[in-house]
Length: 333
Image (cartoon, rainbow, N blue to C red; front, side):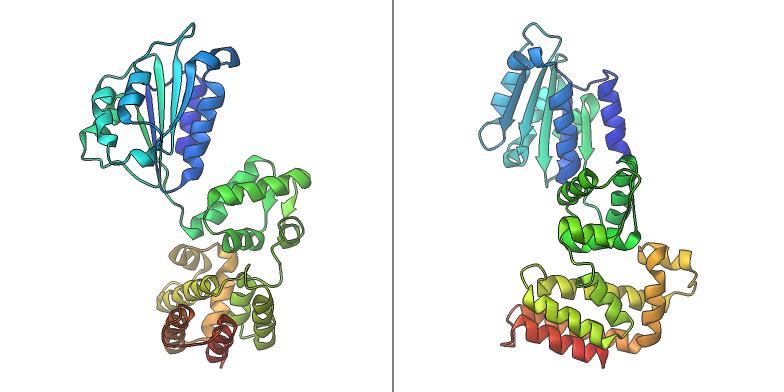
């Protein structure tokens, strides 16, 4: 995120690169940088003749290079944006000759999503020398909650850890999806609001009581009635609560619990750092460790693997509802 701010600030100050090669697994920041350049480098009068948007599936590298070598018309520079450039992955190395000597009056933006240039290749070295290469890395789940907090803080909002975790567990690590939902929240809630689970439920439609986070907590605390109430809700709303997601999140929880048992330093800060969780949630692991000794945790991880195999139709002919009920019974007893 700091790299993105630095790139945007450089563009604002007029320190433009002839090539921006935006690559990596997380498309959110690639889009943000590209959209900023598209909207701000040229004024509206200049864009008509000097701003071109191309798509990787429709053009060849030679066409891109030919356009990039043109001079701008009645403007200081031209902007060429190549979207979905990953479709050019087989020929992207041909960009090397242009990158070695780019047209200084052209700003060429390459959106190379979900892929990366090989750092050993001449094309990478030429672009890195004469332009800018930005790699947008996929965030781990334990990093996204902090990202949500920082984004909201920049908009003068705050969010409770539980509400943030609820968003991550429902939306995953797709920053574009999460950003859209945060926009919904900030459009209806006044600035300075501390966003909680009720706000999430009312404005996004994620149940604050019947979700994988609450199921995981109920299982950790061995609240059998609550856990069964949640899985019955899941059965009635299976589209929004797929079994594979529930198994995955429970597996992450028990894997972290196994790590917790092995820690020598069980102070809150040390546990949070070792498990990659917000300190707010450490008490959940302390409670669960009392209900599930190390041997039981190892057994549960085995049960989760078996359930995952069954959910894929291997070695069993059970509905997802029955698989989940059987799994929960074996975990809780």
